[in-house]
Each structure stands twice: as C-alpha cells, then as structure tokens.
Amino acid sequence: MKRLVLKNNDKMTITESTKYDAEKLISYIQDISAESDFLTFGRGEFNITVEEEEKILENILSSNNGFKYNSINRQ
Image (cartoon, rainbow, N blue to C red; front, side, top):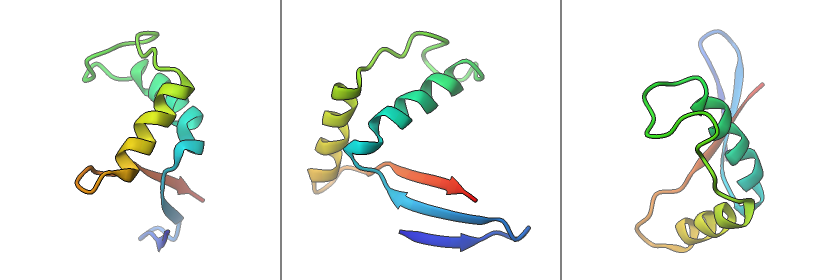
C-alpha cells in the first residue's frame, strides 16, 4: 500500500488488488465502457462474471512475471 498527497492536497491510496476486488473492478469497467470510444467493447459488452474475474486476479497475483492490477482510492 502506498499513500500519496497530490499537488492539490488530495490524498490517494494505491493498493494491490485481490480477488475480493473483482466485483468492484467489473463495475468500474462496465462504467467506463459506457464513457469511452477507445475500448474494444462498449456498454453492456463486458460479460465476465465475478468468479471469472476472481480467477484472473488470482492467476495474475500468483504469477512471477504478470503485472498486477492496482486499486486507487482517492480521498
């Protein structure tokens, strides 16, 4: 976990995601898919279940060379 203070004095916490973040990640991806034309999918086209996302996160976190998702909470 890393805590930062931004130039405008907002606080930000960056943490490594775990399988317990799967539902929040899916929700976030569904939200941004409706807002961006720069993704390979659009509104309603991201159809991964929570269980599938949990497995994806577990695989990434257990690999030696995979990158890991990060959660950013702006406070």
